[in-house]
Length: 343
Ligand SMILES: [Fe+2]
Image (cartoon, rainbow, N blue to C red; front, side, top):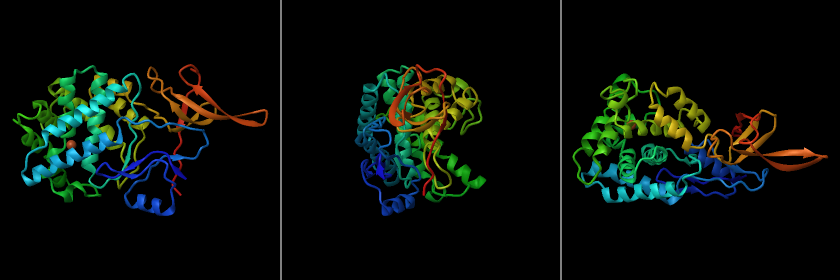
């Protein structure tokens, strides 16, 4: 088996690069790191070029800055605010260069030190959504800073609670919930950061209908950037393998967000998210309603749920590849996503 998409360490470095031939030892190692999902290039559909939201180095840099920021809380040294700003600008520029195409959010990463990689993921998703909503650059920088540092308060929560694989007790959950207010206090009043960043840390667990925490804010009382970060936080968390469950795929996560739109999440944010993010990223194996199985090879920006699917068809006893553009074949639908179970 050849690896179709790179897998990352929790610090953002590449653990196993795309193109590597997978052996038993690799698979054992990946299993030990709780990685349960990977892309395999089996050559069945010719060359399929997988895309990614931002370059490996950019994401690794974002992860590093979150780690430094959280370490700085523990050691009492200064927040690396300049580098955080640079990182956010880098992500914005890369996403800007991809405007007009759907963004694929399908990175595969080890889950030790979950918070660092998750924070970088939330920044990328928040900025993707913010760009789609037409936010200006200064707003995007503030949104990105808040998203990257949204869980900074977790550096003051006991690791035993953060890393507990089992369900938290009510008391432990209360202690975990404090990270929102703690993050706010850490970021409040800093002149080297955008003021909105502190608000995102405090309000990213608020929910549109007032059922969130810590303040139980509702509707527009929740800062717009926090409403964006809330959607990004849930999307990234659901898209990640955890010890206790497999990752959800983008089409499943989108359904959850759409289901919560107007109840838990702001409709304008969910709408922008769905317009910007690929529901079926390139490389997804799908079964179509005509019974054929194929792989997504290209996106249609105007129809996020209707990509181009490459299938194998048999004609006159010979097999060949055919690209079906679902944007122009409106009677054809994706019936299901196929994920091979591990051996
Ligand atoms: Fe959080």
